[in-house]
Length: 67
Image (tube, rainbow, N blue to C red; front, top):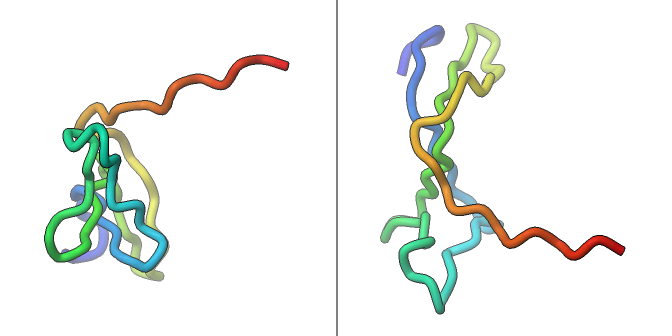
């Protein structure tokens, strides 16, 4: 995508979490290992990426109990 245009941010790497075994609807990684972050991002001419908004709602983890 050319610099300055907005698009959905996908990530791929060894640290991507493949999903939740008990909740397959939470699996965000496709067969090729790309993870849909649910974020809209824009890259500038220097290669810096900025998050601009959300493309979808993603399931949130359960809140931690306060200590």
